[in-house]
Image (cartoon, rainbow, N blue to C red):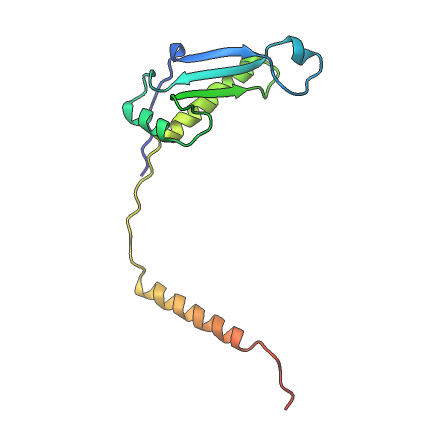
Length: 137
């Protein structure tokens, strides 16, 4: 059983800036600001404290030392699609921090499974023992 935390990103907590994209794109890339630079301050956000703590503990290059998530989106040619992509990446990052895996309970192997394992090892040993040089005597 896994727990899924519900969270809501407020518009005033996310700072989105339009910037010029890098790379190939012809003359259009030099005159249109279609890339998006998203900044999200984890400590100043309205997220629950547990999620904030887990986010700050993540070893992600998009999270700076002072707890600000910086995402740059320039995959698409339109500003709207890049904005949506950056917000989606932020949601995925927060969802990854909100996910709590269920602890595995250690169990012992059954007697039958232990017997099957040993039998298969013995059979494999017999197959390997038959390999080798064949003597002609």
